[in-house]
Length: 408
Ligand SMILES: Cc1cc2nc3c(=O)[nH]c(=O)nc-3n(C[C@H](O)[C@H](O)[C@H](O)COP(=O)(O)OP(=O)(O)OC[C@H]3O[C@@H](n4cnc5c(N)ncnc54)[C@H](O)[C@@H]3O)c2cc1C
Image: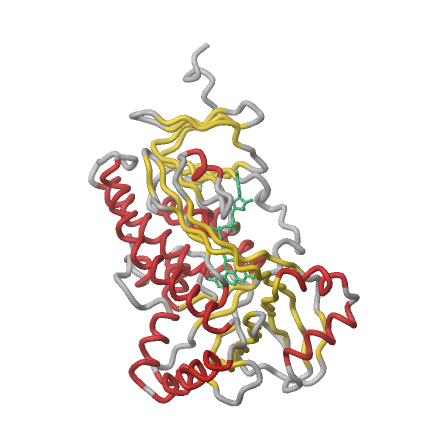
C-alpha cells in the first residue's frame, strides 16, 4: 500500500504548534480561504488548563488591530489598556516616562493574560471550518519533495500539505528537521512570573525597574492586580522558587516597593530560563518558521509575541497573494519574500533587547551613570521619545496589511 493510500488528512498548509503564534497564523490563512491543519503535541482545543503558562503579554497597537481584523480580539474577555510606562534604574530617581497622550489618544498597548488569549484564539478557530486542529499529536517524521510535504504522526496518521510552517517554539522540531542553523546564547537569567494583587489601583501604569540581576516589570492587568516578570540570575532562582508564599512575597515586595500598598500573591509562580536565539533562515524547501521557532528574545521590552505576530502577518500576506494568483504557495521564491521581509525587523529587535539587557543588568558605576544620563536625555527629547514609543507600539517599519487593520 502506498503512503498516498494511507493519507488521512491533506490541506494547503500544515502548521506545527498551536500556541499563540501558530493559532493566529492558522486563523489568518483559514479566514482567507486556505485549508489549514494544525498539530500541537500538548494543547487540545477546549482542554485548557487554567494554570497553564501564567504569563501575560503586552500587545502593541498594530498586533491588536490585526487580532481585531482576524475576529480574535472580539472573543477576548479581558484586555487592560496601558496608558503610561515608567522606567527607573533600580531605586534611582531618574526615570523615563512614556505617557500615551504624547503621541495621541490611544493606549500604548494592552495587557492580555496568555490563558485569555488562548481561549479567544480557540473560540475563533471553532468558527472556521477551513482549519482542522489535531491535538495532542506528536510528529514522527517529516519528508519534503518537489511537490509536497508529508508528515507521519506517532499514532500512524499521515498528513500532506504544500507547505509546513514551524510555529513550535524555541526547540522547534520543524527547524531542526530542516537543519536551519541556530545562533543561541544564554543570559544566565531566569524570568520568574507571577500575579500580584495589591491594595491600591495601578491606574493602568506599567513599571519597569532595572536591577543588576535584571529588569523587574510590573504590568497592569484586570482589577487591582499586576503581572510580574522578575528577572533574576539563574543561581538565585531555585532558592526563590522554593520559598513559601509569605517569604516569596516579602522578597518580591523589596523590589516592588510600597507604592501600591499591601501585596498578595495571586496564583502560582512560574520560571522561564532566558536566552537569545535566532535561526539563520526563516524558510527552506516548502517550509517556513514563525514566532519563537524563528527568534527568541529577552522579555525586557515585552516584544517576543509582538514580533511573532508580525511574522504571522507578513507570511499570511505573502501566501495569500500567491494563492490568489494561482501560484504554488510552497515555492521557494514565495517563501523568500517572507524571509527577506522579516529578517531586518527581527534583527533590530533582537539587537535592541540584547543591548538593553546588557546595558541595564549590571552595577558598574560608569555604566550606571551613563545610562541614567541617557534615560534622562531620552525623557527630555520629544522626537527621540516618540520614535521609541512608535516602535514599542508596533507602528514602525514596513507594515503588512493585517497590522494596519486591513484585509488581505
Ligand atoms: C517571562 C516572559 C515574559 C514575556 N512577556 C511578553 C510580553 O509581554 N509581550 C510579548 O510580546 N512577548 C512576551 N514574551 C514572549 C512570548 O511569550 C513568546 O514570544 C510567545 O509565547 C511565543 O509564542 P509561540 O507560539 O511562537 O511559541 P510557544 O508559545 O512556545 O508555542 C509553541 C507551541 O508549539 C507546540 N509544540 C512545540 N513543539 C511541538 C512539536 N514538536 N510538535 C507539535 N507541537 C509542538 C507547543 O505545545 C506550543 O503550543 C515573554 C516571554 C517570557 C519568557
